[in-house]
Length: 131
Image (cartoon, rainbow, N blue to C red):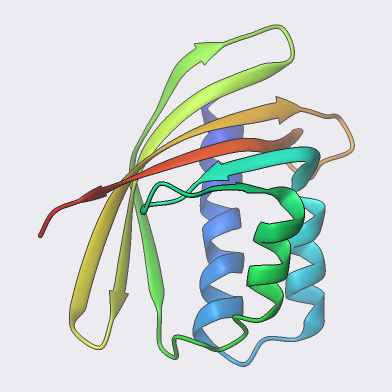
């Protein structure tokens, strides 16, 4: 399970960095849309609770909004394996033009056989790390 989780977390953030940090093709946004469950929700670094549509609408408007953005992932851990989901945590670091910001992320990934790594994103909670 850990290998699938690592691969999914890395791929998701490569897609995000590609979409937000470069001039990516619309297929990248389509791939991001496909990774989220219908009932996806997210708690942002500023405490807002967003549903799937709000997150996807925000992403649609964020194409190449942070040129050169890189997203680094580390410390991926599996906190719990459930019958149909896995709870994971990781450190997400954004690097852009010499500026770095980090956040601790907890995510619930839903098991789904048709997903690329057998997992779809159901919930994400981000906590900023003060600089």
